[in-house]
Length: 181
Image (cartoon, rainbow, N blue to C red; front, side):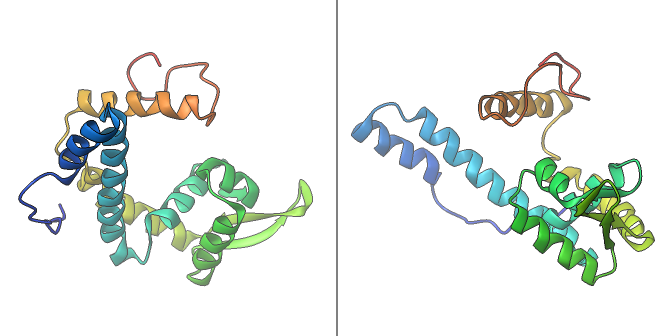
């Protein structure tokens, strides 16, 4: 497990900001929650990127490789990669360019769409995903301090936000969540 560089602050800056917010503007709970989520995202992304750095990957590139390995044929249209990763097409192009430079994916024409391009994972890309995934699993994706019920609770709480944002239509429980959505 990685050791995070502590900030060593003598107080919780989010709690302090919430106290001041409460006095100035009123209810601070939403502000404190969103600020906590944003800080947690920074911490987790830094930790995941550090875990993946020895593999020559960032978390964004790892996600793309994993997504492609999940496909039936080991290849996906770039547009679909962007949709599934919920990123802008320019970001997908950047990610695939870097993966291609390291010979982890190759681009090829999409036979179903004459204008489209597929990103296809290479044998080296598959092998790298296996090694990187073992490391992330061993590090529990940076969430080793939480038990299974807490992880389900975190996912459930954030799922509601994602549904409200229109990420997907809620029609069934989340796969692997162990409970109804």
